[in-house]
Image (cartoon, rainbow, N blue to C red):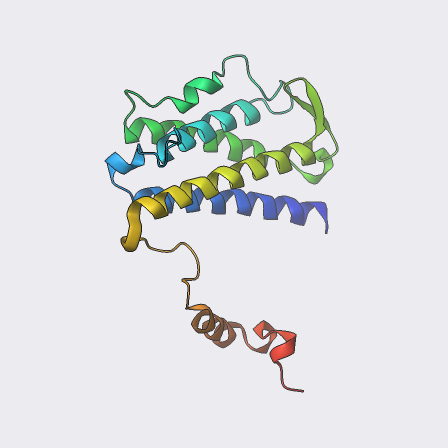
Amino acid sequence: MDEQKWLDDVRATFRRYKMYCERAAEQVSDKDFFSSLGGNPQSIATLMKHLGGNHRSRWRNFFETDGEKRDRNRDREFIVEGETRESIYEKWEEGWQVAFESLNNIDKADLDRLITIRGKASSVAEAIQRNLTHVAYHAGQIVHLARQLVGENWKTLSIAIGKSEEYNSKMQEKYGDWYIKEDQKEK
């Protein structure tokens, strides 16, 4: 795959994970936004605050400074006492803004450049992949928590269970025969 295509796909994937988190969080009440399950101290609020803080640290001055900024207090990201939903969203949006600004300024020539995170050298491509994996991990937690907290009123973020054939039919109507899997085509 060409590097520019990879970068475009990565940027789109980051945006998609952000959207999944937000659509999941929108479905929970303010009380549940701060709730955790099964003795786990993490809530949707703590996870969103943590991702915002992580982005702010990792992506700010991306090429010039270590990805673990001296002004970051990671442990505080998991404390939401005294926070409101709005204050969490401010930290969330600030982190994502920094991340997207940096991501948009990276081009394929930068992918082999070295940066540091916690004093360890990584290529830009490795650092991007590392952060994308981190986001995916926590996005999954956020969606799972929201789904459990919302219960039967959950609005799926993808294809609903039992609706795959209906979805595939719509895609075939929209895109034609190329959407049909090879083993389904008539010979």
